[in-house]
Image 1 (cartoon, rainbow, N blue to C red):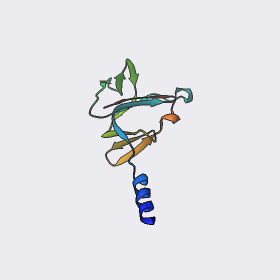
Image 2 (cartoon, rainbow, N blue to C red; image 1 turned 180 degrees about the vertical axis):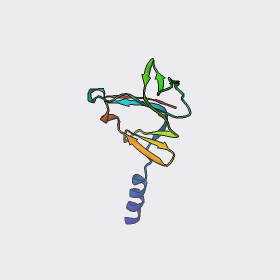
Image 3 (cartoon, rainbow, N blue to C red; image 1 turned 60 degrees about the horizontal axis):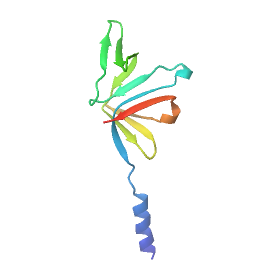
Image 4 (cartoon, helix red, strand yellow; image 1 turned 90 degrees about the vertical axis):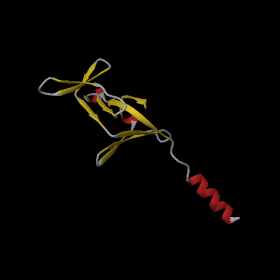
Length: 106
């Protein structure tokens, strides 16, 4: 009986978090004075404009000063957060922390 209970607990406790790869994510809090930030993977390439002083990403007709290409973006669907991987660092984005949060799955 105890053995069956342990096996059941292991099965229930080992459910995998459902994830999907993301091509790009755009986020900001304009009400706090934040500018839009665009992160993208190799599966999406925005138009990049360099005026000699700074580099902008052109996205949906907007010029974005804050942008970067990252290695991978993973959406943890059930927990609703995004894991960003680039080189040696990784970070997490939580959509509820931003008033603007858009993304497209790969």
